[in-house]
Length: 405
Image 1 (spheres, helix red, strand yellow):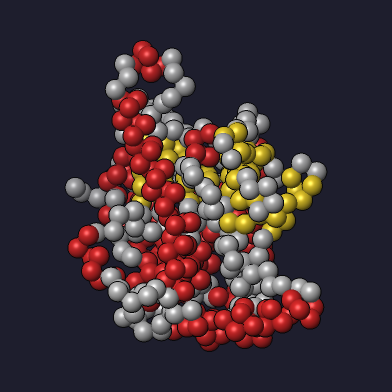
Image 2 (cartoon, helix red, strand yellow; image 1 turned 180 degrees about the vertical axis):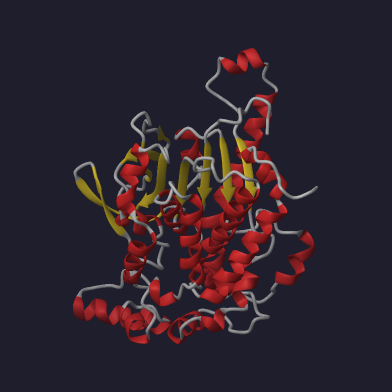
């Protein structure tokens, strides 16, 4: 930990987006909970007084915040949900429902246009995520938040969404009274009571899930996934007062060059490959850029004399990143057959193969694979990756590592 970062400095948790990939975050949180217990820190307060999330990460963030008075119990609850999840709990995956929403390739290209002509109604998304609301009521007891803020178990919860109506990037936050909104270029924050609508909006993957309506300045706007146009995913935690931030990614920050040949394909890319590439751009690239920017700022601040630094608004942000050590699309390729038949048909129509050895279109599937065999493997990976950084985690929190070096 840097010398100018006091042990009592507020700690923030930033959970990024990624649909079903967010199961990886849960494995990381489970490892943090176990390390905390083994370090004898159970009598300490909630380790994350400031929690921010985007997309599926917003759902995990809110679930954790709602159990801020019992961190271990909250983590166990989230783990149990993700260990036993199925696609039908997140979106309607039967063939009839998918045809109605234009989810199959034929439905999108043909039936959707016929419906537009006959019923003057176009499909709003590939998938209908109506079941997700019911899952949220089980997973995220939002009614507990006000009391947890009042009792001091948590300082802030923030979730981010992108407005299709105005083009603005909005971070909605709820927390203690001293917190102040912020405004930056094309992004701003609003103090609001976090609701299930906010979580549905933040996790509405573009094209895949329908937009959600939220009240904005006495009118309604349509919002989609918060990862869209998110130029600074770490910023909300900083604005809310965190000076130490644990960042959990949903994809590898750097792809090893020696593995590049394994994914090289000279044939024309399928729609699934293009869509997967676009998804990676939306969900992963902004975090990589923001981390690089934060590290450069920290390096610059370190060159400033202490007396000048104390007079500046800039300060060092202690970052700890935990991200997948393996390609999640490669893991997804092994589990595509677990998806409901109608979903496999849809994905097969755009170029996703059910062969475990064929990973060319699996990136797209990796965001939609809300099936327990896949999520459990991601959770196991997250747990193992966090345990490999056990020493860094203990240093970050100021815990005494119970295991010998």
